[in-house]
Length: 184
Image 1 (cartoon, rainbow, N blue to C red):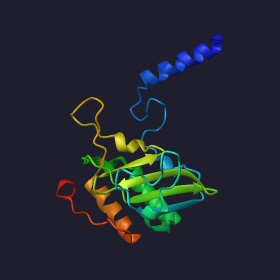
Image 2: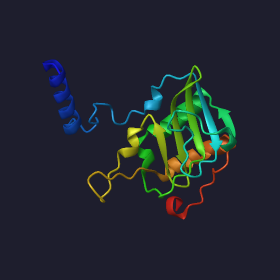
Image 3: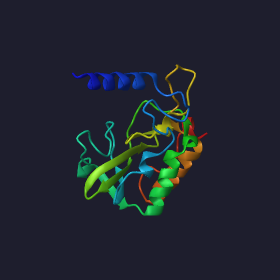
Image 4: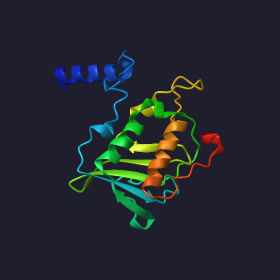
């Protein structure tokens, strides 16, 4: 390796491991509370009601949509619906709740650009959290007393209500909030 490459690699490693001291930035220097879905370049967003049993997300690891036999219903989202959903998911007040150990999502949102998947989120109201690509940093803003790196990544009660209303508006299944653990 030449000197410049070594210097760059060293600076990069130090940057990653030390992080920035500003509380509004992550170790990578990104705004912690910016919802990446707000700046995502897409031309279509589709919500899917799907069978996520077995911890299946709406998009697989190879960036392909889940098998069509597992999709119960789909609905193209309007710009207003996307904006409303992004406001919920990007707000750090939407998090801080506990989660269940399972993950069987039934709501999936997939963002497309020219037919290609550019982002997705799988939401499980029963388990009280989501998996997304890109990562939503606001989900990791509520530290717990369990350990130095533990966060309460579950949805807040208000966020659960707003997400339930969103799912109900789409006429999808699994919109009712029945959990004594999360909703009382």
